[in-house]
Amino acid sequence: MKRAGLRLRLWLAVVLLTGAALAAAIVGFNVLLAGELDRGADSLARSRASAELDVVQITNGTIVPRETADDAARVGGSRVWIFTAAGAIESPLAPAAVTAAARALTGGPARFVDIPDADVRLFSQPVVVKGARVGTVVTEVSLAPYEQTRKTALVASLLLAALVVLLVAAAAWWLLRASLSPVRRMTRQAADWSEHDPAGRFALGDPHDELTELAATLDTLLERVAASLRHEQRFSAELSHELRTPLAGLIAEAELALRRERDPAEYRASLEQILGSAGKLARTVDALVAAARAEAGSPRGTADALAVVEEVAAACAPLAERLGITITLAPPAGAIRVGIDADLAERILQPVVENACHYGQADVVLTVTRRGTHVVIEVEDDGPGITAAERESIFEPGSRGSASAATPGAGLGLALARRLARSVSGDIEAAAAATGARFEIALPLA
Image (cartoon, rainbow, N blue to C red; front, side, top):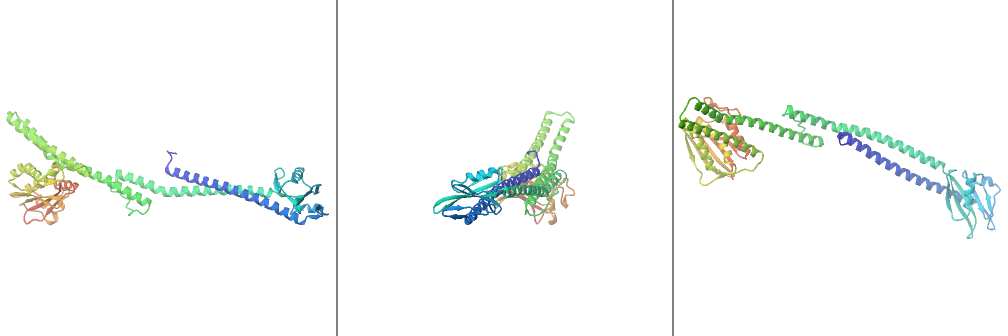
């Protein structure tokens, strides 16, 4: 049964329970009917005895035989015996066993005796005159009609029960098939969507019954699967984007060092450069892992906001020097701590500062302030700025602003920075500025 399908198990349960209930009902009905028939036979025997007592002739305290004894020996088509102390004064023709049983009832109280071989029931009723018993009236009731009624009722109830079980079985099979077939189709469709079409949804609206509740649950599950796939694809794209530059630096520096023989100082400088690129690579991987943990709800660390900004400014200093940009840091009035790991905060801030260095003309200003429950880091440059229509589109993966034609890049840095910020309950926005561009990075306050 454990290997059988749910529909078969439910169907068998319905059929068996229905059969058990009908069996109990049949037994109870037939038991009650048998008792009622027995009481009916007893009542008929008593009424016949009473009718006979009403017409019996008694003279001087003695029962007198009637002239029409043969006719009187029958009441309602049944045999009647009248006994006195001297013997039977009325005795109809009857089988010997029945007559013997009737004679045995001449003494004692009123009582019933069944004779199975003759299928009859006898009832004895004492005849009392002035407190003295002068005889006994014995009446007979045939049990054949009652037995036939019992048999007919039993057969009819069994046939009815069989018909009901068949009807219930057919109806239950149809109902279960009609009810569970949509569930099977939905589960198979959901499985197919999860493998081949992550965007597929049932979209049956707000749940109002079991099927729509199942559809909503499967839609939620499919959405989680689709989100997981999107996160995986995005993580791959971000990993490729973030690791491309440090890996290219490592390869270029190694190839340059191996191109010809160099003195130890030059090798040392090359190794230091490789070590720096490797460190950047390690920090990038740590930041992406920290972002994944943050999205999964893992506990977050804390870091000094000013130290994070200083670290990012130091990391961007070579780029700023090469482009002729001066990075200026405006420290906060007091110590402020962000509620995330330092590496993750740096990975959120660094792409924005690097962009400011690429697009700025001469100056990039970093300002750290506290605003409500967030630490806000403003990054301003004096470059061409961002149009109002581009303030949201530049955060989409692969999208770049109109001022980026002469600047290399894949358009993933700001998208990654915003996603990382939002994964820790922060955000990045391109704010309006009189000149140049101004970005506001909001990170949770520790």
